Image (cartoon, rainbow, N blue to C red; front, side, top):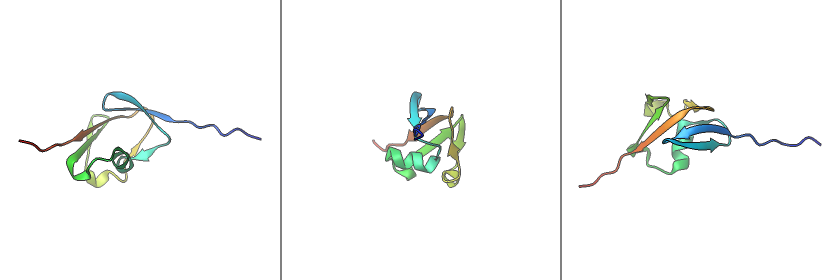
Length: 74
């Protein structure tokens, strides 16, 4: 019987090593972080990802992602 090998992909998320189970979209990452879509900006490999492209932009091994969560206050 063949052994099922679980491989994760390594990325850098907000300056820290992070593992994903598989390649995912930017939208899936944002949802997994449980942040409000309207209050977040995402940079992938030093390029800002437009919100309209979150569903179609895939995060792959070695990518560097910065997720900026805007917080109101006064």
